[in-house]
Length: 535
Image (cartoon, rainbow, N blue to C red; front, side, top):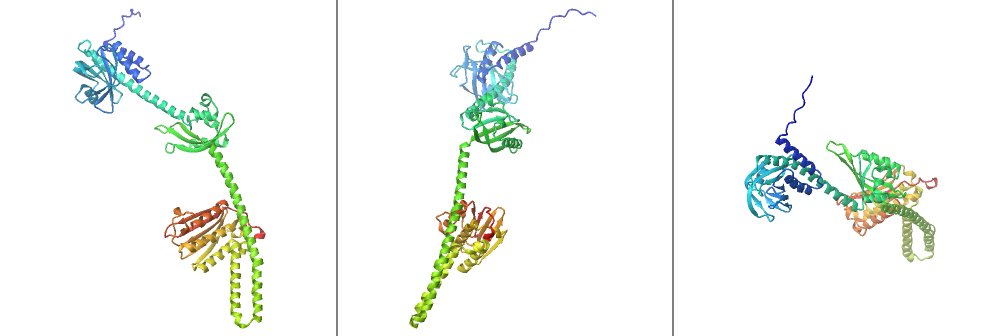
């Protein structure tokens, strides 16, 4: 079967020619670097390639009745910068009809022609083509034949509509790209000029961006940092594993985490960084990546470690001072008991012996002197006990607290009971003597200020330490207003008790409210068990 030679190719129809011309112009406009450059070239190419005599680009503003100029052709046929011009787009104007009625084309037989100053210098036919972004009208492309005075043919109006529609989509995209670029420039300016460390990570924790501060902390250039797995720079291998687990736990509902990590620089130097990490997810919940903002806290960590060492030294010194004070109280109590007490007792016996040699008239004075000696011996005994209660060493803290409760009841006339829990028989004397002294001070405060009708002491021993709670049903007070100089609520005594316990590694906690009584908890950490000689 033979075929004849092919005939001539069909001639393109006018619509196809127009579409091809618009397509060629749009390809060239897509190369514009900025939105302003796009608008300027659209006006020029529309005249040169598509044959429009005069074009002008106008865009919507936040005010629906005002349009913002861009670029256009002036009354002399020259390119004019109209970016500083605002034009009224009222509902009854042709421009306003384009925007409000969502019409692709609106024609006007006698539209006003304005000069550079915005003054009307004539009128003529004009067509307004809507710039669409796919959802709404963002502006208009205006075409007139003021220079030639000729009417606008329908084909030119249709071509304007096609050009305006495609140009609207390109303007929308370029506006978004310019906005994104400005946002990125602002972001980079912000992160590059701050002292904090800023990084961005892929979902696999690979560094996609690092600011200058982070590169400086690692002593590496930007090119050597980006593309590396972030956890490679964490100094401690255990911290690396923990960091990976922390990132894996972030969710759209809980996308933030704050951690402290050691990072190792290229020169081997270790820096401590406090990181605030945020995970980003898309609308479907898929992980997009992470951003970390870090603050170098190396100096702060050094200060904290130095303070911790100083606190440990102060704690050890406080324990030594407490033991030294207890030892001194024991020595003074021993001196009073072994020397002053016997001397007073001998004086009492000698006075009794003198009675037989003195006339009966003087016995009254002698009885008064003997009564004073007996009172002095009793006060001496109480003072010796307060300085260093023998039962604290001999019978333990529980028995000593029982004695305090009984004495408080006798002296204040307020019932005071004592309860214990835990292995109280294995408490170390030197460690717990401060608790006895503090409890006695608290009972004095209760007697002076609480106006209580009952008081309880509770001694509790557990593996975490020893706890003594002094509770009363008195008038109470506001602990937040307690001051060392405030004697009404025992502030000065509480302050010094708290300081002594703190230096020993213990604590004091106050729970109180006006009219609801007071509970003070004294606590010391676990000390050594009592030796056989201490029981």
